[in-house]
Length: 396
Image (cartoon, rainbow, N blue to C red):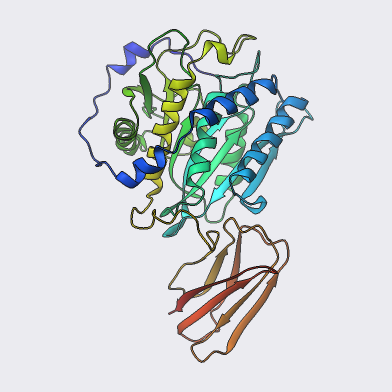
């Protein structure tokens, strides 16, 4: 839900370096090149067929179910998915945000958020914002098995078209309600990136924060947006155009003093918020190229390690124990492990079992106090009915 009435007036206020702060990484490009035009077009077609997605309607719920099934088909577990439910404007109709979490290896408590809304107004919303949804889905698919230093949350917001209600609720009830407050490295928002049929769609608009309330996050947003523009050039055939962030789901984060950036189509559709927001008026090849840029940028921002990216499949399903070394509390990340019932044990260097805990319907992250144990090297074992995953940890 965006309008560009004063774009050319305000864009002259900004100067940003376009020199490359990153270099081309072949292993990133190898992942980007697995992006599928067929998947993008199929997602747009399926999204359109689900109808107009307003609060309290079956199409909105059906779209949420469709999204969940997509993530499950990519290898994410039900444990990695959370629904954030809320109501607004006095209505009893429940809306839901869908959050899919992938835990990082070095900074598990710091998150890169890749987000966009899935609700629509006036019509099916195939461009606004099935186009952003398709990019997020393809990025989640290709990064599912790739270790990243930072954690990633792929978020599909509802309630955007009525006033950013989904993202507002997430910021107030999840980000700020987390103890300590959720640590966010970057919010990367995608809204209306489908292009216009019949036009030359070769440029993506990259959006930075220039709001004054607050303004303390503007400088880092400018740096991150510069890096985003470089990623576009490195990993897609698109050109870039710099603009400012407004009227989409990154704004509640901006008001919360988070760092934001985003994508928006440069040729702007005339069909948004109308019964004619259909695929036939879009450019699916452009949408595919935006998805490639999104994948490259997410790899960059979440810091995928090229040395470990040759591993195409994690035999351990991304299960991890952190921090490591550890002092007081050990966190167990279930990753994409399909089972949620498991036994966790610690074994010392003499082969003695010093800790044994059983979890039923475990959350994505479970915590175990270990302050009573002696310093040293231990073998951590997570065992389900069908699998046994072991890792070395150090208590200091």
